[in-house]
Length: 638
Ligand SMILES: Nc1nc2c(ncn2[C@@H]2O[C@H](COP(=O)(O)OP(=O)(O)O)[C@@H](O)[C@H]2O)c(=O)[nH]1
Ligand SMILES: [Mg+2]
Picture (tube, rainbow, N blue to C red):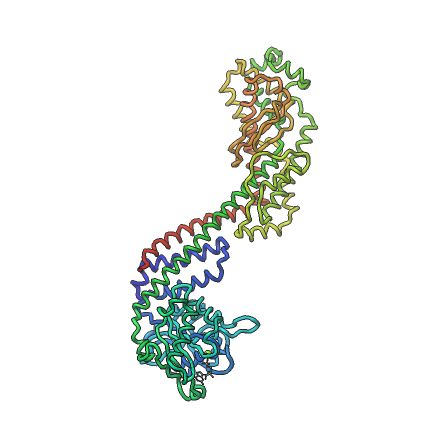
């Protein structure tokens, strides 16, 4: 090969594009199958391998069954290589002739063969052409035409409604720089044939043709021209004349059928130049350049279209990924809907008390510090029966919390699992299901619209579908006690919070006293609480604690239902909120993370990862392809 041509930037960009587009289609599972495969072949065959100026023209002889293609091939290469006659469709493979001068260049031959995914195999026995298989080649004699000639199987013969030879005929047509279309009086107006050729020829880089009419000797030149132009118009449309390199006639002759003579092509248009003269007179370089430019611009057009589809698919994928996150966050939120504020407060109060200076501890015991403003309110509400910290939590609360946690874990895992397997993921539907299930109020706030599962997720969904749901659920539930517990890590953080509060308020001032009062009263009062996504707390009977920023859940609040708030002063409410906020935050930060890890490990992780990874890779491939298209487009010479 011409190394300079192959090292050209255009060649490089095309190669990049050729690699990235199929990768993208595969990554995003674009339904681009046959078109993209054909695009790739065209890039390989008619661009990448044709950067060498020494590469000869490639002409494909094609036409309907028994039109005389093989006979013409033999005539042009001057030998009896291709079997002729017999039943239509009998030639199953492509046979091509290679001019002597390039026969030693196995790389050129190999590149010709690339679209057939076959190794170069010389023709040994004409019988081999009657069996399906890859193309075969032969060397032409010195002095023959300087072009690669292909004899193609009939594309119009079929078995059982299938055109058996079309794939191999298509390979040859895709590889061709020009076409020699052979037709007879009986099939010249057959739209089926010309439509197939038209699709092959005009899709990308419209190629020119020679028309060969096997007709009766009695036909006049005008008749021949008229029929030939009908064929040309059927293939190329209105401006067909631009694409016809020449019209030739091959008069019916029984000596040909008898194998006694070769076909003699007679010029019809232009009327006075033989086929050999016409062929040799072609400005190959110019034809190649024009074809190259046209092909390149079509190839880039199609690449842009594929890329646009990839972009929109990536957008869908992102939407799906966001939908999955929203769903999972929602399920996490539902799983942790109730939390043991009472226990949390009790622990916090204990830590607070143990960090009291000795003098304060003494005063507490004597009762002189218990002059808190809530006393009356709480007393009136009948809530302060319980003694101060140190009492075990009421059994019914911790029991009911454990039961609720389990229920919520089960319904969250179930819903998450169902939605992950669904062709449409919808947090709003899942949310309604949660609300309908049991005694719950629906979580408020807006949910995004349902999104379709992206095909990228298919295999991961299948694997999830085949996993045993019950064991997945059990794998989550074995951690239930841990989830409901205040672990060592959280304990440390609560200690940190105590220090923080102490540093912000002197424990001697009134704020400090109020704070202490809250600590003692709340564990008894703040029993089971709700978490809502947004919204108004239930009148004045609950303290609303903002939890925003946790796992992307915007406007998330913990509602701590405390009856005493009804009669509480504004300032005290504020104080209470300032204390409860960080404590509840600590709980949720730990628990959301823990349960999220658990859900991902047991249920959702693979799917989420697949989707994220495909998205990131597709993004990179799209960027690379975009750059390659832009750079290659600069190489499109008008
Ligand atoms: N009478 C006559 N028969 C021809 C002519 N050209 C080809 N044939 C015959 O038509 C039949 C089909 O030809 P073939 O080259 O095998 O057609 P293919 O299927 O298009 O390859 C064979 O029997 C040929 O001998 C011709 O000019 N005159
Ligand atoms: Mg044939």
